[in-house]
Image (tube, rainbow, N blue to C red):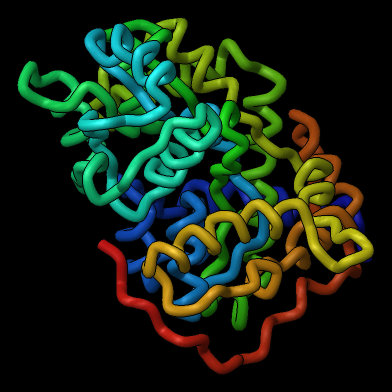
Length: 343
């Protein structure tokens, strides 16, 4: 086999696929999972990943980022001024917090209050609003609530309005692991694993670019936010955004590696969200996260020496070594107990 020709053809395939790809943007992950018939590889937060597990329509194959530092209990000016008295009292009392229901934002708020030994009752202290725009509007309204749960990019609106001190506590502070996952649809996993793997490899190369060229990436990200209808981010907001850990191929493999007990770091972090969703009544059973996380795609990319190198550098080297079969398709399996479709 002509290795050079084979590798060049593979690189040409990725370039052609990138040009022909259909890139979809959703305001949240739940609608993305609900429209899974229109995509093969995607990224979303942990609840949409778990939603997809309960519906039997996808598996998680990696971590897309750690969002813990950009998911926070936030206060407006009045809330910032009153926080010290709340800490001294050890209770929220009549204070209300606007949160998005059944979200990682609600999880972070609960863990932040527990960390600071502030007692609360969700039934009386939480006011639910399904959108981040609605949460921010409540914070901005003189008659609204002084505290809320926000995540990126709406979090940055709070930073722009009330300063960085508006972030009372984030997931990192509270020890709440808020992550997102790389998803492969069930159809792609059963019928087109090589295409899915090469798409993931292209994504990983983008991660390498972000890690190597932070300032250029900040400028690109700002352009993206403007395209999506958000105002440009300030340098301070961009610094917060880029505090999120991103994971290249080697780091993906570390997250997926299992210990002697058969558990991976990624599986353990996802399990925290599974437990929260089950206890909140969002999903009907306490799933074992490890059963829905598959390392075969990252391992396949790593086994292709030239492809692995291509994802880890900015070289335009040919990406696929010859003679390595694609990841094995997953046989059709029975679906788990179905949960209600999230919107």
